Length: 152
Image (cartoon, rainbow, N blue to C red; front, side, top):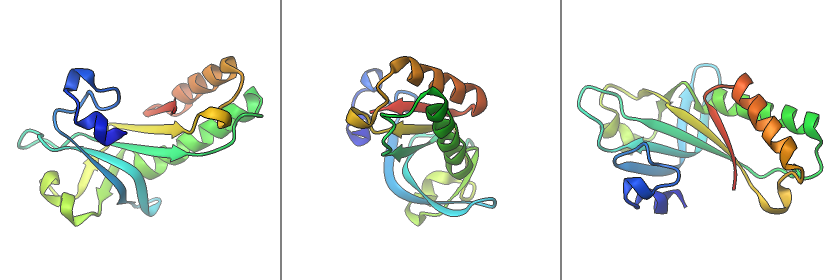
């Protein structure tokens, strides 16, 4: 779905509108001193970054959890924990380990991450009470800035 989005004209993109020329890569090895080597579900990197500037990088973490029976407090706690983990593993600054991406990185393999997106599977796994979802998403915004939470 992200690859399809990347191929649309920029104004029509749902997820990748901040990119000029997004490159979507799945299961990319990334390293941080605190968490070691991890594999981002999806990493998006700008192919057309200006010379002398680091490329725009965003990461996506997908979760398939049954949140349908959780009350507001439990839902909020789970989502804050997932967002904190996603930020810790895939946010702030990453050392991208995939050799084929090195030419896009220019100044070494360490790059700042502009945004982390945590995407939960929707459908029957989504919480039934939308007010609880909105409250939990707002709590994540306050407690874990830099992580965007979506349901798909």
